[in-house]
Length: 473
Image (cartoon, rainbow, N blue to C red; front, side):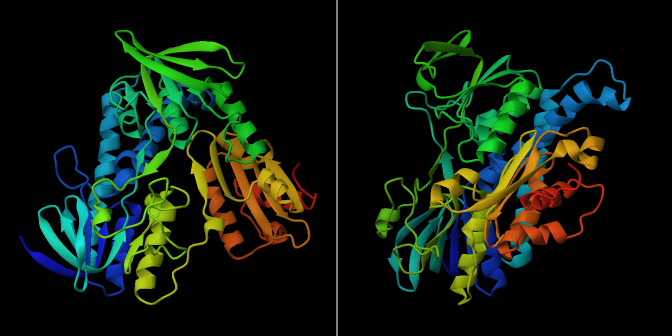
């Protein structure tokens, strides 16, 4: 057993951790990253939840299922004739695994390129030591002057119905269903649930969503959420709001979920598979933070200040394991910022301009404040919206669902929020993020020339709508 000295030790190799390690190495620090994720063959699988059982594999399956739905329902509109259309689920899952491996291997390459030392195994504190902290990395012991904790989060289980990843599924099991289930239940209408529900609905599952909250997608702008709900229901997704879920029973014929609907009536939902998507909890399992006095809050998250400093000197924490939105790109920004702060620079993370995306069809993306948030804060604002129905590129794509909505300050016209439901919303939102980061006004966007025909013209038209002077509606 050896003891190796490092300037910076990063525990966790997800989006926050591996990016923090790379940036620290770029800044001249002798850097190590510890990660325990294993591939199916037992080797390292860098990239954390995002790469292995989250963002990346879910997008691969969404793409496959979208292609299948286009072939079955929309190709005929283009004059493309098909017969004997089928889905090879094993092949689809194999492609998804290939995409994941490409990303895993890409991070290994980046570590080598940037001279980051990688240790495969669980990272945990041993004790505070001379020159920093002693940390276990699998079978090895390392000492680091600075430690960055990027241990991510775990799916929250339903009380009384633990995940078995066979019938009661987290995001992990939902990505590995071997055959298309006839009846699929979703508890929670969160991002993961809706994306996975979309995948299996397109492939033929009868999907029912049970959501405890009275409103669909409560964090989303209300107008956008209603538009999305309308589209999902039209596609065949069954959505029940305001429910109280009771006992989940497993039998030979599948699962039964007892629940009370919004009217207070007792109901039972029979399904073959059940995906539970009711949020995630910070992951500090096995970190041994108590050995060094690491402070956690009541949710189990690591307590940090605005700069991601913990209560311990030279110990930092980022991503899902701390406060703020559980988003891969938020973790990345914090990782870069912390590495730069260690170097004496001024790392930058603006929580007000972090974009959110749900990769359903239609896609949903937003940045900044919603209309209901502005009303609650008593802030005077102007709103403008433009539907994709009136956008030439959307018509050519054959996807005219949704709109772009822009909110600006009533006096200064500074953009306060942009909300999109529709085709390629995930890409369109970047213009809004840039604009808001530079404190742009709606008039600024309205005055910028946008290519024609393009979906981005809907953003320009929404900006024009703020001043009630749309050109194409």
